[in-house]
Image (tube, rainbow, N blue to C red; front, side, top):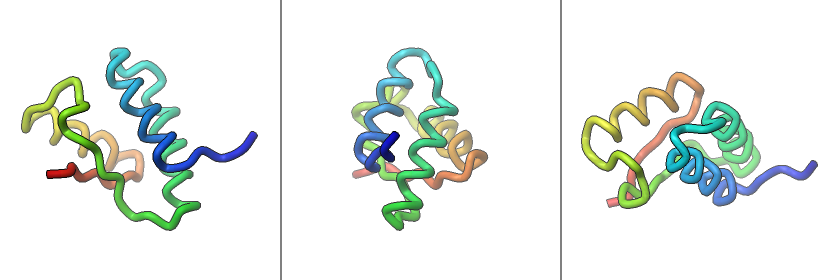
Length: 76
């Protein structure tokens, strides 16, 4: 099995968020692996693509991902 790119892993996270967080932990782990291969320190997400695009939703996402070792920020 080949490793996912960071963009592919982020797309899987967006899809999971849309599908009521289905397999989110697996997708976060894949994103973490892709980021380590690419040498990236932070995942940047588009807030407009989030299901819950408000401050509370973004902070919850950052906290959840941080607990799993992925630093999240949002594009402006």
